[in-house]
Image (cartoon, rainbow over the protein chains, first blue to last red):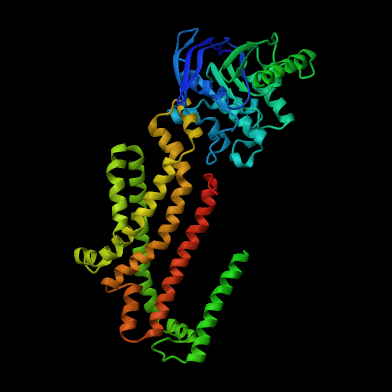
Length: 243
Length: 247
């Protein structure tokens, strides 16, 4: 893979209108690998991701975001969310090269064709998003992300709306196609975190800590006993912190 | 398609009630002519009605074309400039507080008896609903799409044209649908106040000469034009609206 993502360090404090959320927030995202932010809904996982992407949030972050290569982070990220964010008025092909259009540059057509083939959407590129299944739409979103070709990719629960079978296929496809990039995955699913990520942070209200994770290579087979054991352990940690 | 049957049934019921009143109350012809008399008058005067209908239709189309263009341009301007929002928005609301119909005599005074005053009347009526609907749509672009554009390093201008404008199309279309209903009203009001052509003029003329059957024929023609316009825009825009993510 030609693209290799830098390591990223986030360090600082976070406030919202009601007061201090995190006194000392420190997240180290490993270069070229998957780091996961695991926790129940509504604790601010996505907020942290938005801070990284330079998007506005209800939270004020005071601190530093540094990449290991000392270049800006927010201008080098792409973003995949739970909803596919495909434009309903544009064809799949147009959606995939949206980034170039929005920046006023020409899209690399050869690269686009290759990516469309990689995600298996050759027969659907002239269709509109409403004509595709949920899984196919998420593939299109992946293709759009790949087209952006950024070294850092932020994933905000991109698999959570998919059925079990499609979810596994998508996880494998994403892991394979984004190999070498620095990934931050936000999820509430411990199984997903264990199978995909070389580093796992557990985020509960006002508490963020590193949890155990498995050694590469990823993605792990879901039948792997280590996956199963660690998944239960993480689940216990999340639940323990809730009570 | 079942809707058509209900519409046809509704029209037939109105005709039936009308005819029943004629049978039982036996009003003089110049007060209320029978439906058949109106139909015969239409046939007799078809060339005359057609000639005047063409004038009204031209006014309506010009009004729609210019009114919608102005509305779209204003909405885009309001969206891109904050000072325009602060300055123009109150003016727009104030202009709606004035009964636009009351301006018709002044327009005729300023612009004469020709087509211009009628077209301007139609524009005035259309302008606000189109501007308001489109600007509403532009300012309600889903935030997640704007976030995506921002992450993709899109410029403000390109975000406007490739994200906000298409996302606001369904709102613009509902504004245009309203405009299609209002435009014939505007043109007719203009004709009533002072003109020498158009269905509104023909209605006044027929009324003054106690040709009530001709007046009704002209009135029904106007109704038919308005309904067709509304139906056709509705048909075309509903399909388009779906493409742009509308209901």
